[in-house]
Image 1: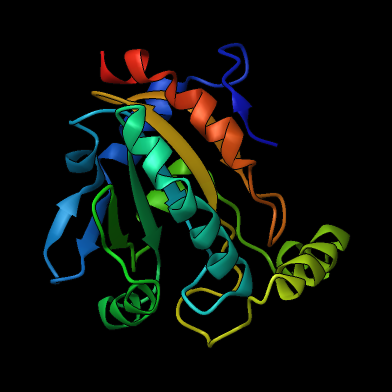
Image 2: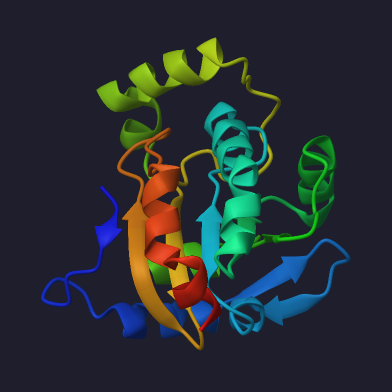
Length: 197
């Protein structure tokens, strides 16, 4: 489960520094370091499993719905997948992204995923009881699988970063469809005053 960080369990800033140095690609194919998107204010970094995943559609929709409140708190959303740039373009176009308050990237090499400690595995992805329950919920909300556009066994997660690279919240998915509550992400960003400070 995601939570505010317990410093006895993890050195959050060291973890953030490793993720910050990871190279990702913008939709125009430019290579850049993830930290380039962490400068302006608190950043909600959403790492999706793969661009055709039912859970990824669900997570992106939930986070995008919260973007106005994220922006009001001085924050920004960065969504990262791991398919090709072309696959990323197709996925994000279907979501009417990017848009103000949301940056979209892809990490074909999955360097940022590894640096963040996001796991991979067939059992966690497809056989975990939580994944089966999450699938039923996502499907009931109208989400569907649209293809295989990235690493099927990769799990995702969410990090909330405060500039320059301070990790204040981490959620590593334990199984496919294990998403944090958006309210927890907003709380990690802080109030409008704290987020803009």
